[in-house]
Image 1: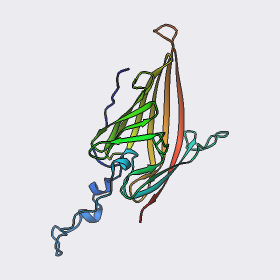
Image 2 (image 1 turned 180 degrees about the vertical axis):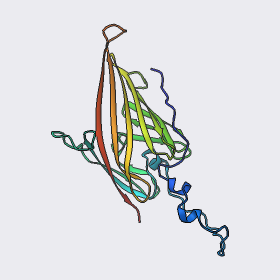
Image 3 (image 1 turned 45 degrees about the horizontal axis):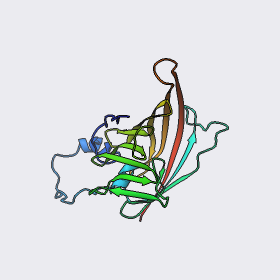
Image 4 (image 1 turned 120 degrees about the horizontal axis):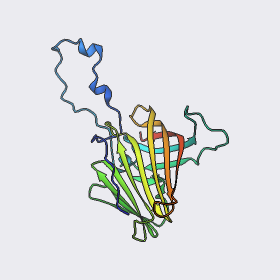
Length: 239
């Protein structure tokens, strides 16, 4: 199967909101042209960003992230009869390096996990047994994930991520082929709440699944499935 690459939206560096910096308040607009105080020469404080934090759409001195995911309706209300998925915990050291947890569903805590990084510290390959996951980047943004089984891409999947102007993840695409089934999915992210560090704490995932079954054009069955989840992130920071 050929790799499929989707355009990455915008080119900002971090997954943190910064709209306030570009929108002056009324007091700023009405301020006098000159000030009696000497201008500050101090550089603005930069928010910490490591490749592993960027990979998971985080910034700042993150220590631990606890993720809760619940299937919900279009109003964000939990669906009756559906339990929340098992709570997920991801931990980082003080340098922003992931030390336990998972990367987009891949548990790196397993003993047989081998992680390879490039000269910039970005994860470019993870090997677990016969399965290899390869990662490509655009600057500080994860761009694609390819999954190989015993060295072959066929039967596995290619994923691509897209971001908005401030670097927040908005869409995750997936295509997989195997056992006569072509599967495509699109996960649209919509973040609704953020903490004071600029990291989102509540988001909604809209899943659209498209499956094609059978060989050739005749006899194919095509089905669309739609699901929505509410995702809550509780973020703990180093002090």
